[in-house]
Length: 61
Image (cartoon, rainbow, N blue to C red; front, side, top):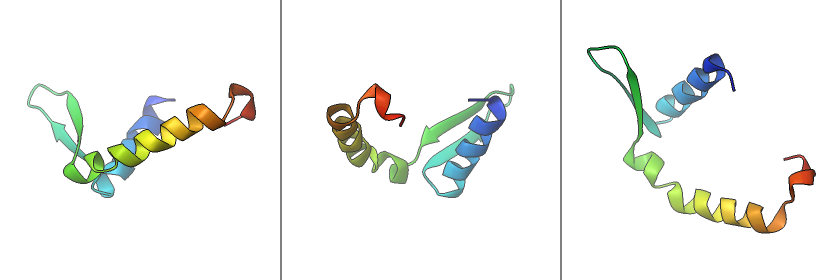
């Protein structure tokens, strides 16, 4: 994934309130999950588990 695409995706997550973006005084940008984003962890964990059990690497997903 290119830096540009990653930045676009993170911006979308910020817009949705799933991630917060902080720029420090020395320049680096930091992204962190918000409470709303963290609330998605159980669902993502279950989807990951389902995918591991039901999809093979040859499924093209």
